[in-house]
Image 1 (cartoon, one colour):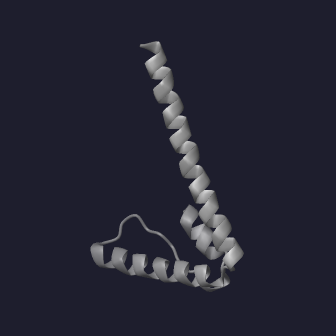
Image 2 (tube, rainbow, N blue to C red):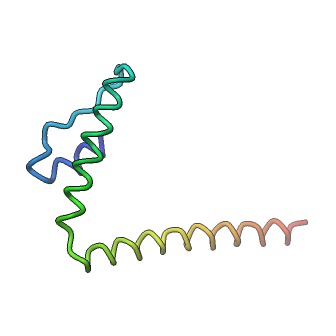
Amino acid sequence: MARKGKLAEDTEHKDIWMKRDMNIEEREMEKLLRSEAKEKKNEKRTKIEKKNFYWRVLDMRLKKWYLWKKEEVVEEARN
């Protein structure tokens, strides 16, 4: 439901609901609607917002990598 909330911030896409009991055709239609909503929302973003989002994702990946390396070093020290 978190995705629905993020897409619903844009007033054009408040009617996107996610159901658990969907058949394959319904899932494909829902996936298509969700991707169109994301594309429209991304088009409205400014270049600065896109750049900040890119760096935030990159920082999260680096943080995970450093935490993983730290655990690896601790494991080696224990052995």
